[in-house]
Length: 503
Image 1: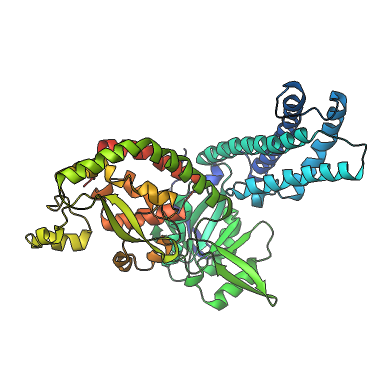
Image 2: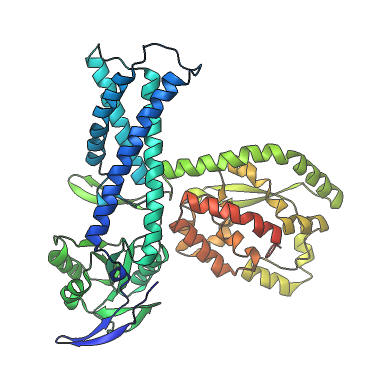
């Protein structure tokens, strides 16, 4: 990818720092890019809806499936005429539901939720038409297949187009030039998050701040570009479309002043951070009470469709997994009993969602008199207090060493997954005593269920420092997608086989 060299330029107002502008590398203007993309979306939706209508006719009338009873005489011309009416009608419904509005595109699973609502409304209108006009008779099986097929095909096509857009962003397309106002910790955290999320579409050019000199490096290759007084110049020069305010870096008067200047400007989106970036990962909701807009914080990180997808993934793997590995777990239990006295399972009291504590199950890997053994090694006890892990732990039994090296000691945690106390993928389990180490990040940690595997697991496990584990957990919580869970599960297999950091 072509790059531009940062430089300085003298203007009438003073020194201006020239940042790298990735969006300027595209051969087409941003309006043209989005126009072509939305046009492609419309054509794709029309084609997918047409395929769904034809597929539904084939499934209902031509395949002779036993699940359908022939309740109406099939008439292809009749259903073809209905399709000619439904396709433009559904396209209009898609428009009304914001499925071609740039604000609602490429923004996560909400786009698919809108597609589901739009197809459901379209199908409901057909049902109502059949109720109001008795002579308008359609096979119920055909209606059901049309509803499901149109939603699935439209979403699959949009998913593919979205991936093409994400790939094109690496070459400067579909990027929105942006500035962050404020160079305090929150401003830097915003930059870290926005630039680290490669599919966000934001081309963050730098920072604006009254207390940081022009050209001062703030975060990686992002520099201070000027003061708030020079926003007009910077916005015009770089065709800025997103102005992001780190509210904790600004006074209330500054925020009101910036809103007055840019809050109603066409082509410029003014966005305010929560001011609690270090604490909140769960998202915010604005609700009016007595005509007063109040902000509430979601108690959990995953809601709605995201929560359902994660739950389905957990149960699809955990339930069959427990059945398949039951004989292996029985053999492990016998080996533990023969190896050393004590219970088969070790129960560790850990923190769950919203602070609810539960017992996390593992196969016992230590001698039951572990504390007495550790008393003989004061230097190891001190190291354990610092890192919460010991590489050469004298308390571990011979069978326990094998179980830890192969991660088989964690198999009983599938029971916790089935009980919805844990997830297959999530942050590392921590005890109530460890909450103090996480400081303000602990609130974030309790917004999702702990996981059997996670970013810390595929990044070196116990070889990763405690501070790095916290950073990895926070990165996972902030950037969660179902695809990240699937990716981590796939990476867990070679990580376990290699055994790096397993002790």
